[in-house]
Length: 219
Image 1 (cartoon, helix red, strand yellow):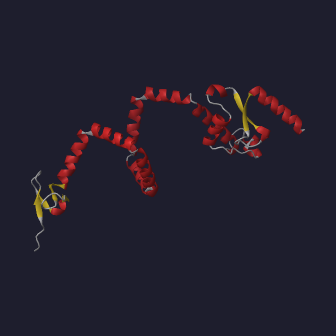
Image 2 (cartoon, helix red, strand yellow; image 1 turned 30 degrees about the vertical axis):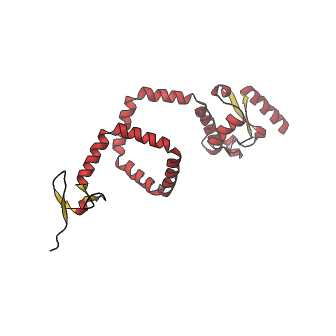
Image 3 (cartoon, rainbow, N blue to C red; image 1 turned 45 degrees about the vertical axis):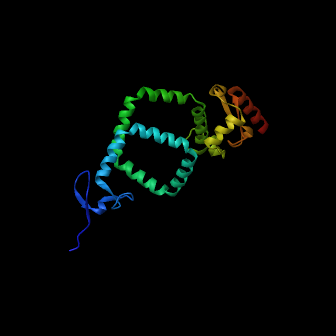
């Protein structure tokens, strides 16, 4: 019978097979003195008792190596996109109940802050323009929209993504605050599509007057 080489752990004092010890080139036998189980337990204790220091150290490292980390993360995420998506989907299914409970507890405990954040966001130009863009998209693409027949049903398209719409309005047209846009209608130049160079903002009165002139011209 072939005897399996063994070693005694200097922490738990149990004799175990050599496969239960990590390699270490500085020791005589080339193995750590503590078994894998003891090392794992010690690491857990260390991580738990040094959370603050480790978080601070990680933050400093990430700031100092921001460019390299971003490049590495981009490559890694691209190469492991499928595995990450699969893992995330399985994890969410397995932890759905806990996540729902945690979410409810968090919302209940931070209701005031959440509402304050929502109110602050709802006052931003980003939120205001997103609503205007979404209304354009619905008029052109949603047959259930009450104005669809006059827009999408008549062949009018919204060629903007939200990003391109936001950039066009703020940079090209120069509207940089909600106050500058309140009370203004989106006017399609020459009754064309919603696109870069194809829209302007007018007061409701100006908009209606221009439409009357265009109708008379068509007749």
